[in-house]
Image (cartoon, rainbow, N blue to C red):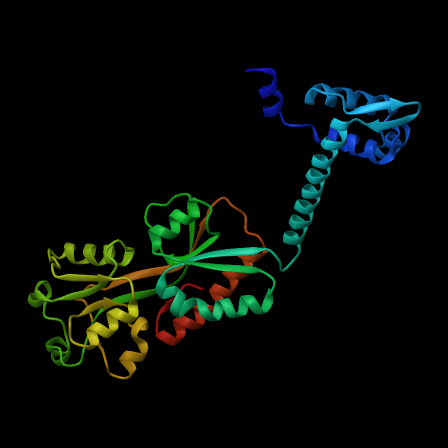
Length: 317
């Protein structure tokens, strides 16, 4: 490595830069040393080391005064920018540390975004209007991946599988059921016919989702294979297609609460065994909460209790 590259790659000492900046402003070793609470010899030694580091003379002594060389004048412009940015960084951190300011990044499933989070977010923004809040939609696997990559702070989703580094705080448990339009033979019979289950056209939530995985595991245990499947990422679109008689779906009834109330859809049990899911908040196990995370989780717990009561679900809060 040549000498020029060694100067370029070695970081500059901030204490030496501060001493140089003070000398440039005061024009005197004595005055600079007094301002920095250092001895004059310490400042002099610091400047000698800095000049050796940058590879040129920065200062000229003229009697008791200190004058900048041409290189020193050019260097001063960069040093002033460095300390300006350092001051801005400190102010930014101080603002973030102030109560009620900062950011909170949430990952949430589409169902949580639509049905669970709105009242929670409304209360959070009432309490902390200056907090920068962002919501990243995604399924359970995407949320845990985003947590691992430090792209979000908390996730509101289904309980993940085999994620020992994360903690899951349960909020409520729901049950998946068949949803069909009222003229479907199962709706008229009041139950799903086991022999017909493999022959139905299903319109289900995304194949790479935790919900789809649970549905497959449920029917695999009964040696039943669902073959004809359209997978979609929109709950609203799924419900519309089912209402048109283009297939049946498997969802939690609370997702179709309005459609069930208007009798546009009918909910039927999957079978003698129930397929239940646990919803909650997922976060790093060993990472302490800040004020934003702590408040958000508390609001989620309060909101989940009310949500579970309205929809006849089992609450864990």
